[in-house]
Image 1 (tube, rainbow, N blue to C red):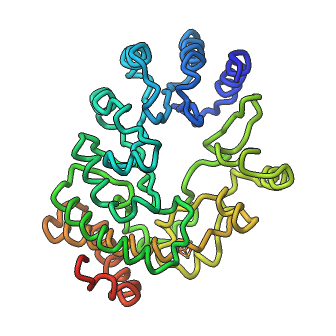
Image 2 (cartoon, rainbow, N blue to C red):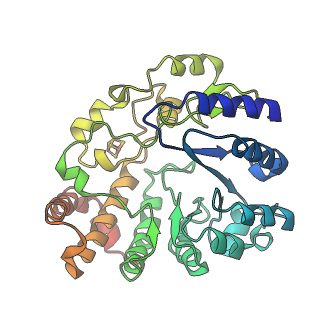
Length: 347
Ligand code: SF4
């Protein structure tokens, strides 16, 4: 993106902010955003040079391998405004396998010290599934308090395959024990609001603000509903069909089958772009990961049950009641299917 295009995009964003918006986040996407460090600096200065009618912050995720001392000094000077998050997949062995021997090129302390509350972004590969728990514990042991994107919905696996369930069950078991003893550490995989399943079907549930609260601009300044729904992923014809959708209307994104038939619908994240990629339909959810999501939910329920047993006051009375009801229901629904994996020696 040229600086002129970037300025035009920024002016457009700030010009169109509606009255309900009180804060925006400006994200820089790659590939690797730090390849365009000079442009990031210039657009940062441009935005800050003018009075803006809403608060704003900056964000980028990096693989951490290109950071020079000059960059570090600039980020340190601007860390109150700019959050730089790190992608890191786990131990040296896992990271080197998943990401081209890059572990020793990353200054972990730089990220931990400057953005202590920012989570590390972890991606799971087929190679790293058997060390899933070890990798997560390692990241926490480095000082990262939060793990984002230990996302089992990602990855090109056939999640219906029994082998993955067999691999993951003992990993989840270890993680439940770990998080039970480390309440201060967060992992979005385990931090789910179970009570939602019991309270009501949350019809409006949408994973993100695609096309509504989110906008994405390509290098030519063309606007798209998110970073995924672009010509890099979809054909011209698909894009034109997708863009006809009214993104402001939640009803357009409800999978009626899931809403009616699936107890965990309110906590099942979905990516509408991925839905379209698989089903040529934005609202029809990808079903190939239902099984793994149910297994995950079973362990989330286990962790929350143990936490409640230890201290029921972690929830208010209402939430406590609904969470316990959800835990009972999840066990009733999913234990029979997964019991055999939980009885395995390591589980
Ligand atoms: S787990 Fe599967 S069936 Fe349930 S809501 Fe998610 S996609 Fe639909």
